[in-house]
Amino acid sequence: MAPHTTTHTPINLLETSKKLWFICLLLAQVCFVTYLILGYAVTGITHGLSQWTRLNNTAYIANDMTGNVMYAAHVLLAVIMIIGGSLQLIPTLRAKYKTFHRYNGYVFVILACCISLAGLYLIIVRGTVGNTLMHALTMFGGLLVIVSSIFAVKTARACNINAHQIWAIRLYLAANGVLFFRLMIFAWFIVFGSLGIDTATFTGPTVIFISLCSYVFPILIAELVRYAAKKTSHTIITLTCACLMLLISAIFLTGLFGVVLASWYPAIVA
Image (tube, rainbow, N blue to C red; front, side):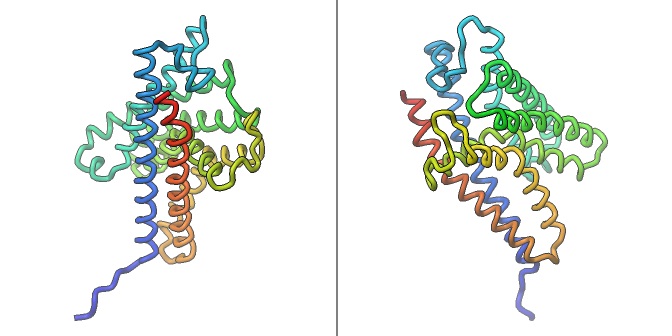
């Protein structure tokens, strides 16, 4: 008998690198959700919403009920959205529990849109760190969530599974843009320090570059990976995408180490 040979090794490597990236992202999401629950939900219940300012100085403003509600929705609804969104990407759950996948998808879409609208409101009314260009990129991420939600639902209702999966991936990436930014900025701090960042105003070319990497580049990378997965004969493109996914995974793990030790854990135990 002829020895068994593995076909399409670059494709297999690409699929493995995608799974590794997803595992790294799941780990980061678990830490992020833990931070949100302990830092905001538990703190709000035990010490009052005013104590949120130790986590973010714009989280609570006295006599601004609308803004405080918007911030609470933006932060606390994210816990459910993050968990539900990742469940949508697990193939086994999609295949065996189609009804759950459908309704969980609707919940994810609703929460993602509500969180994005609340975030847009907070940026416009309360402002945030960084300059106008960074704010614009963050708002672009929020608008992309809303647009992707519309098309994800539309294609699902039309039973256009291929198009639905494409828009669902775009929605998932856009909805995690804020987490991507935190992971990448802390990875940068660990490797390069404050190079290109004015820490007093949180501006500079590095901040803009990482904002692009968080809100714009993920969509472009997803398109490249999708193209590479289809073009099995383009070995160089496929291997390049696999290496890119491995690099992003390493950046996520590095950034997670930094953000947990330097920001999330100290904020929770303070």
